[in-house]
Length: 191
Image (tube, rainbow, N blue to C red; front, side, top):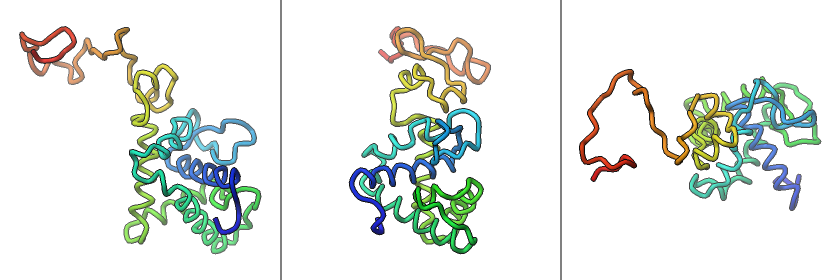
């Protein structure tokens, strides 16, 4: 942590930093006037509102145990970026959070550029941010839709039928691709 935070402060430092990264990947609107992580660069909910931090903490990602290290590394890059750009950082928030949105974008572009030695790491973090928004992989889809998940809603994913299953009365390709097998059960399973 470079001596900057301890205990609950460490969790807040990590959370603010990772939320700011996720918001840089899929921007959204601020959650309130004091929101520093979400820059407010887009209307509606972005990756943060879609649960990017919840997804990152999910052990299925394989990186949940390394989030403190990722936040520290990102903030180290932000310090160097700010120094090189002549930006006086706001010490009340983590260095990446202190950057303006356009500077966050520029730094993420540097980190994900082909040839950057840590590119795979930052692209992975970006993919998880996108995944939280466009598939809600960490959530039950029907529950996420019922809760108004911003990404699934924006993508136009319909609500399931009352029994929790999705049935599409109009085929997605505009035509039936195959006839239903005569032994298919009412739940759609093969007999």
